[in-house]
Amino acid sequence: MIEKRQFYINGAWVDPAQPSDLNVIDPSTEDPCAVISLGGQADTDAAVAAARAAFPTWMRTPVEERIALVEKLLEVYTARSEEMAQAISLEMGAPIDLARQAQVGAGAGHMKNFIRAAKDFEFIRPLGDHAPNDRIIHEPIGVCAMITPWNWPMNQITLKVIAAAIAGCTMVLKPSEESPLDAILFAEMIHEAGFPPGVFNLVNGDGAGVGSQLSSHVDVDMVSFTGSTRAGIQISKAAADTLKRVHLELGGKGANVIFDDADEKAVKRGVLHMMNNSGQSCNAPSRMLVQQSVYDQTVDAAAEIAKGIEVGSSHDEGRHIGPVVNETQWSKIQGLIQKGIDEGARLVAGGPGRPEGFNKGFYVRPTVFADVTNDMTIAREEIFGPVLSIIPFETEEDAIRIANDTPYGLTNYVQTQDGAKANRMAMNLRSGMVEMNGQGRGAGAPFGGMKHSGNGREGGVWGIEDFLEVKAVSGWTAE
Image 1 (spheres, rainbow, N blue to C red):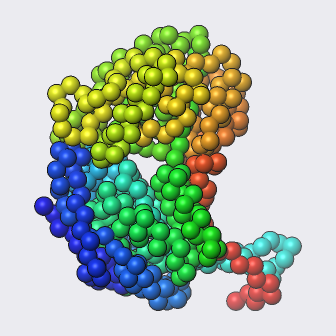
Image 2: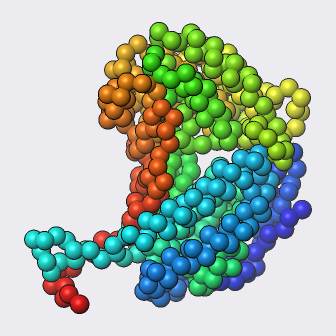
Image 3: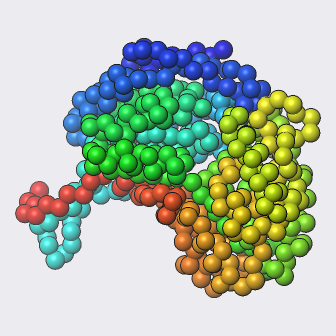
């Protein structure tokens, strides 16, 4: 049993003021794998005070020195990448190969992209030729609270921590209590890299406790949150009394629009993308919209692909999918699968219960529903499991209407060989991101959504800007 009962505050590991222990569960076995302590108000206050005290010096630290510390952190992170992969696989159920490549790899990739973006970023820039003595100054917001999820932990932690550090902000991180081990390891790396005391602080806790305390704390200037839309609304309300900035990256219900001229790998690509990380991704293409002329053959192909996906322990190497994160999530997914059946969707792969051969662990059968209508529960709610809904459409206008008929707006996908049609779709789909024909977003592209999928953007230049205030200065003297 791993024991991690301390918090990282003001550059040191400290005992919680009033310890309250929590078991971390291995979702592959349902057995406890670690014990951590949850923080209370005194711990939150201490972490915020440390960040507040460190802010004036850190914001005046030359950006070149801040970048150099991130570069050192990247070296430490790379050297300890196997430790990080093992921690993520154990605590949230990502198969170890996925943890090594995608989960850990995302953190390294974001650090590299932020370093590149920071070296070209003009923190002081001219307003324009028409106003030669005006300058626009970008300065850090201040103390930032960061509340991160369990599904892609290093992805989200690095998107927030590295951008804020480069911007000159100080911070308090509250990772998910479902996946705290990776964050604790990350704090060790921050310490090893030599970040000054108080710049980065870590307090474990749950949303109702430390999360709420940070969201309403008078000495916190910004909250950056990734998680459910429901929690994002609560955080926004809690932050309103102190007028702090709130950055939200929330849920999604992405449409993957497959036209009759889509390439031959489009269906397989869409199904595998949906099932990746056991469906636990906010940008998963969970609604497959298929043009009527190729609908039947697409349904058959999607069902066969899903039936061929293996499910297994996160501790085993291979290209299988692992369990979902916990019993609560497993039960929610089971209820939504049953809801799909009850509301008349046609089950063509998977279904309720654990996969054959499993009687323990939070494993879900890769599931595909056909003949789904966009008013069904499984088409409206974010399931956050390996469940795909297939919806037919007739025309391009029909596809746009169905795709946009959702409260979410994170990522949509388009599959067509008609370039003009693809571009029209990209212009008309109401989402923060659109990916076409299997081409992923480029390094440093902004990640984020609109509507109930949140606000703000993470990654690259946009990620740094989200942690900066803009100051207009006139009468600037050239040096």
